[in-house]
Amino acid sequence: MPLDEDKVTSAASARIPTAMSEFQLFFYTGNRDDKEHLALVKGEVAGQREVLVRVHSECFTGDVLGSRRCDCGAQLQAALRLIAEAGAGVIVYLRQEGRGIGLLDKLRAYNLQDQGFDTVDANLLLGHQADERDYTVAAQILKDLGVRSIKLLTNNPHKIDSLQELGIEVRARIPLQTEVCAENVGYLRTKARRLKHLLVLDELPNGSPCYQPLKLGIMEQINLPLSEAAAHRQRLGRPFVTLSYAQSLDGSIAARPGRPLALSGSQSMALTHGLRAAHDAILVGIGTLLADNPRLNVRLVEGKDPQPIVVDSRLRFPPYASLLRNGRAPWIATSQDADGERQAALEEIGARVLRLPTAANGWVDLTALLQHLGEMGVNSLMVEGGAQIITSFLAARLVDQVVLTIAPMLVGGLRVMDYLGQAQAHCFPRLRRVSYQRLGEDLVLRGEPHWESP
Image (cartoon, rainbow, N blue to C red):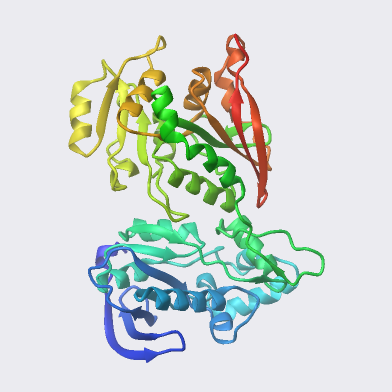
């Protein structure tokens, strides 16, 4: 059923004083299901932007009984506290127990977990999907409350994407990680590994009862040169360039050209979004845009969205691109002889076209592009891909920092360096000042490229 045909109605509301603060509890019914949903509201939220919101799915065992098999009850209490401290916010309480499978099958799933199956396989064995939750009612409730944009308390990137697809503007993600103990560590590992929840966990020392959040120390190494990005631009006339991408153990970034491949785990995904927030602009090639249709914004951490830039020598940028709905008009770097009618059409739908000189191969001259970005005041640029863009920046020696995520899998697909022939072997730099960090199952490497003289 399309979203605009779904209706929710607030049948009643009442003042609810809690140990945290005083809230107003709204009772909602709708025509999408026969369930009774709730919204706990603190302060004035109608017409407000960046309202602190938790969309919480019912968990009787965790929310009511305080079960330590999950983190649901602790997350609910943490959300109540954070909203009370903020003075305004909303908790949407959806009646979809057990990731949508209901309490009866949730208890059956618990028994399967006690036999050694993880939380995902237990659901699948019972004939359910890994996660059957739907956030349409949550979106309708937030619209009924008049919330204009939100900061979402969640570790679940799928929840962010779902709400945005339903018309809710998610301006930031606020992590909601609580204490992790022996009873729920397997469950949370599964959520991070198989459901891509953004949980950052250290290894459990012998005899220690709890996990502790892991600090992303490698970000300090990444951010250190970025603090001098303005001076770098003044000195060289171009932005400081960070090249960042993920690959498999055998160097593959995709199974084959034009087909995206999910490589990064949830923790390294969060690191990537932190990288985006640390840069003024982010750049991809038109091939990546056509294959992935990325948003290139910051959703998994707090921070501002970078300016999106697409290198598109022949103006193939599609009118359906998600970048046109991000709030920051994309810049399209194209050649001087690109089609004028295509430029006019793209500018009419919100893009900004930058015409630049071309290199000998007919593509946009990257040196000229970076010089132009420097003149426009861009101090730092993050380059995410794809393979052609990555190798072009390396071939032009326009990279100041490399951040590489290595995923523990073998793909046998497209490798970045396949675009460089033997005649361009000098384009392969050696990395200096290298640092490493394990994030979940991934290994993240950071270094500064150094090229030998030709």
